[in-house]
Amino acid sequence: MQTLEIPVGADTFAARVAGPDDGDVVVLLHGFPQTSWSWRHQLDALAAAGFRAVAPDQRGYSPGARPAAVDDYAIPHLVADVLGIADAVGAERFHLVGHDWGAAVAWQVAGRHPERVRTLTILSVPHPAAFGRALAGEGGADQATRSSYIDFFRSDGAAEAFTQNGGDGLRNLFAMTGLTDVEPFVEVLLQPSAMQAALNWYRAASLTDAESLGPIGMPTLFVWSTDDAALGPDAARWTEEYVAGPYRFEVLEGIGHWIAETAPDRLNALLLEHLPTA
Image (tube, rainbow, N blue to C red; front, side, top):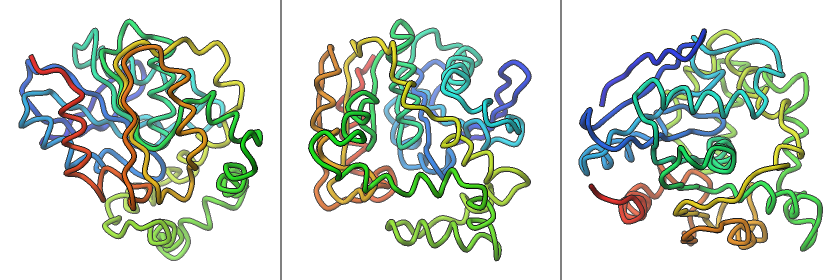
């Protein structure tokens, strides 16, 4: 595994990269409040299988791509970042993997630029239209209750609450959700303006982000875990309604939100089964 600086327009993205230069490119998108380090187990497995795995620290997490304005974290910018990173590594078409906010962006890339995405792998987060239905109360109030934390994440005092006392708020968030090996994430989010930048993803989000999202036609793997406190089963089940191409839905029993790190062997096996070999 190596670290690279990837220029995209005026921005520069830090990234972890593994695998042969001529391997088929797999782009892996992390979520909140993590970085590319969350994909360390998958980077190694993909490289061993001959893929060129590229995991960027996304907008706000990379020091060289950390604008101040909330609007700079709207979905069109996040999608453009992914396409720009793929262009920079020479991948006209690529496999795309996303978790948490990275999954939300991956759905958008796949639905708006299907000609670029060979396969799609999603962890945890259902299709935006399915999630919107659940959040609006279809099937009951379960998802609205699970998502109530978002109001705090969008509040003025959230960044300070997470970073005070050297990041104890962040550590507590991870501990409550079952992840303990977190210091590399805390170190990044304690950088100047980084925590607020990460929270700006929530501030810039809109339910209209799902509008005009095209069909998901590429082979798609969706991995959801039963002990994920943030994302309930209804939208996970409904997601297949929005995938027109070959679709596989895998449920990991007894696993929480941090699938890539708490169930790496199971995820790696699923991922390598899903990705075509050369």
